[in-house]
Length: 83
Image (tube, rainbow, N blue to C red; front, top):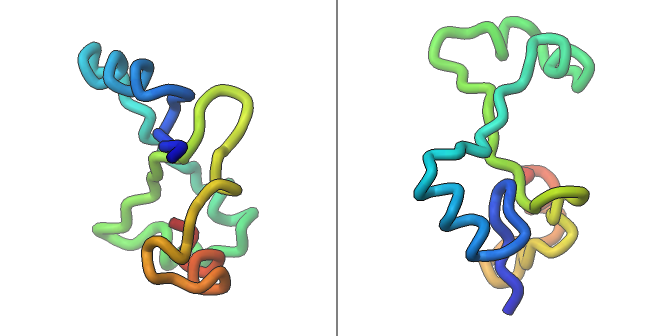
């Protein structure tokens, strides 16, 4: 089993970040949403949270290791929902 953590390459690094309060939640900018084709009415709406804790540590995003089948998702569903 190979776990994936937001912003960490190892479980030890992940737990160290938790203990020190180091957050790996990334907030996206309006320019990034616009470049992705998301209408301003959506990302500018009250209650919209434009943030994610991206999988992987330094140098890679880790999403290629997502096991969609384990979570009962098809590959297509995983691509659409971007877990």
